[in-house]
Image 1 (spheres, protein in one colour):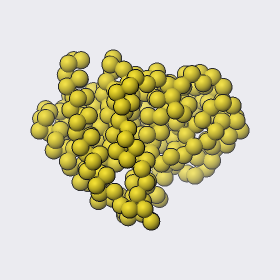
Image 2 (image 1 turned 30 degrees about the horizontal axis):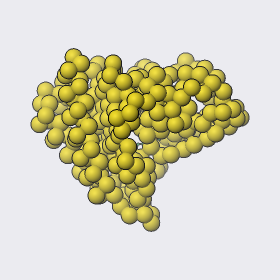
Image 3 (image 1 turned 90 degrees about the horizontal axis):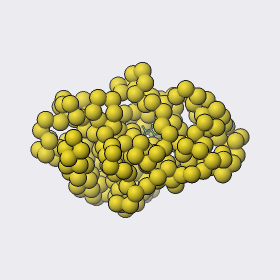
Image 4 (image 1 turned 135 degrees about the vertical axis):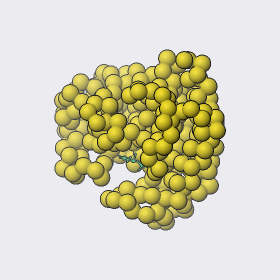
Length: 262
Ligand code: IPD
């Protein structure tokens, strides 16, 4: 299996890199969002569809027996291994010419993310992992941070338009009252990848979808982060809460943010 996974990881790296360049060419200029609003701050750009189609066609040619699910086109091909793709994560940033967005290709077997690649072309960063093979950023191994005190921690709180604002305020209050530094970057996948790289100490959000986390789950697992069970309940089909943290602050952060048991 590890050979089959490695072949897929290598292919995903090549495809996501090309897809990232396509996204970069299609990125709107700064000066106001060039996109359609699907919901509160839930944006759709022309590039979302084009990048997803490009990735889907390339994966179908390389691995015709693998399944495919995309954010924009939904569940497509079926297979025992399924590629789950977010063509552009961080669309609210991308739509207005900002750099913090990425292409996300995850490979799922059953309910487990077994490999994943995130390419952030405007940042010049590529995160990758396969189970048992370690996690990397631009080819260099990464680990979650060794922070053990919330007063020294930096935590990203993702805002989801799918949950009431009050749930976000509660989370933010817990983080700030504990003395941690707050951050919100507009890309769940890249926020979670930063936890894997030890650049921040945690990423928490009240609701996120499978395509946002399918790739980064493998990266977080290989980097030694503590991660909630995203697959619990109907997580695979309906999305779920997400909690990912450096091991030394995970228990304390769960207490102050209400993520106990997640
Ligand atoms: C969104 C981003 C955002 C997160 C949302 C996601 P999109 O994905 O990751 O940071 O807070 O939950 O839906 O729309 O940019 O692909």
